[in-house]
Length: 311
Image (tube, rainbow, N blue to C red; front, side, top):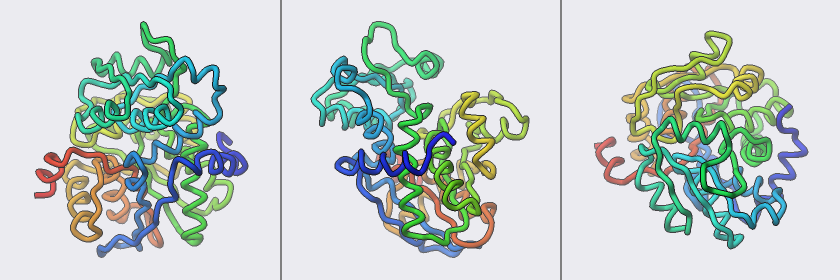
């Protein structure tokens, strides 16, 4: 198992002074199932990414951190790394795709991080090489790191404490670190729970890969759903997902926008596109009956874009 319960509990202790225990609330809407929202958008950086960033940096030797840290991120892991780096008084460099929303990159800069914007292919290559030319720093992977996934897995501990009889969880799929981290602990403590990834139709490589039985590449089209979606799936993340997840639920851009609007109207909560995909998939009925939790992974969206989408 990529993350044990013991590692999840250790991670919870490691991140206690940085991340908050987020609330689990009922979604105020009529759905085929009993829908709940895990509000990771209420983290200090507006995203669950603070959990993984805080845990991996807590477990990294100080002499490595003193070189500075480097990550590749479209925005939320960037903020998590920059937030933790500022607390530790070290430098943070972020390689971001040139499609990254200004809301997220400006937040990184406010925290003291340096942002390098590059074309999508060069950004994705940074994930693969775990380095960037000219930057001598300790690389922190946004998803393909057991310590990052252990930080993410603390969400599973909270879910089972707050809703021990949950039936299914729907989790946004970006690189897979959130889905696989949560799933690893749920498979150990509550194997009956159905666990689904949520993807957007314009970038759904996991669904295509699961159908093919091997990693596949898909066409990628940038959209307001910028926190998840890519052209392909890392081979080892695919193997984790194939063994841990029940499946992947793909939603349309319109379904995601409608979920964003519904949560704002009914629960007075602002969610970003990635989180809206989980809500849309959970309320579609495709996750099955019973008590369903949608992981609201973040709320970092430009307000002008948000108001346009929900208008």
